[in-house]
Length: 360
Ligand SMILES: *Cc1c(COP(=O)(O)O)cnc(C)c1O
Image 1 (cartoon, rainbow, N blue to C red):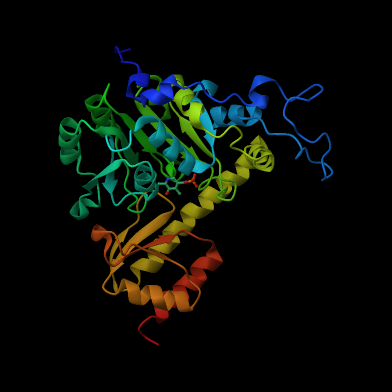
Image 2: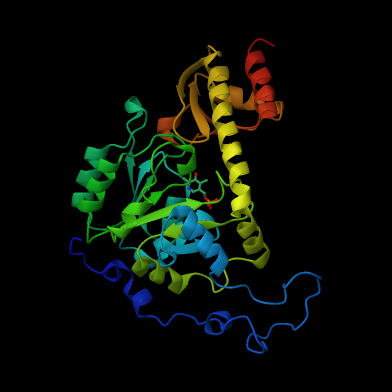
């Protein structure tokens, strides 16, 4: 392995120096005569243990996630969705008024929100619209070389909302170029929809690589709010210093463990296959509308399109209760609409509406 500087040197010194809060449940296991957390001894709801604080990092769930993502348990932190992972990373590594994050726009909106909340500058590198919105790697590398304020580089693969993916050679180049200076955060929220391999195995080799995974998309668990940060233990321990003492509510933990039961896996695989089929059908439906000028199918569970009058179509669809996503504030995505792959009946409704637009 190459020699690597300690990641703690990149973190905010006050986070490294502080003594983390020690919760009752983290000091002692939740068994025995429990008189240490000022809990009620009785539950008001039968069959529940709502009177007890949950495990800070529930062991069974951690094991299942480690198994799912094929990483070591100590390389993983369970969070309230990836949103919380993004926020924790920003707060641990970025000093207000001094540091900056980088994103390749159009990008997922939460990277900038987390940075702005923390008083941290956002450097945006526009994607190449003429090349299927791929990242402008030359400009990215140049910026990484010149801007010493950068602490977090947010990459998304497949990207939302453009659907394009990052290849391994590019990621390695970026990792090496900021080695010892910044962390590269690869958001793999849509990885399961893509046939490209996850970058999780690289975490063991690169101490400045962080991967974000979530149960919100391919695990049909958006309502759970359950995400996973994957990185070397040093990073995970730093994030653990500032995460809320009991981030995951016990009903959430119970449901997340059930979701990852081996028995659910085959149903999940069936649903992923059905979504892949429906994506093909959605593509065919879109292709048949001659007012749609561009279609970017991408590698995720949505398709991005462009047409001359996106707001007109958005309005018409809205009147028929078909809710799509437009990007009015994104210069590169003017007149673009993102359409999630839905069920067959969702697609039936969408098809009817798309066919009748401008002819009624
Ligand atoms: C949907 C999505 C997520 C998921 O966020 P959660 O907080 O886990 O629901 C993360 N990143 C991107 C790019 C997304 O589009």
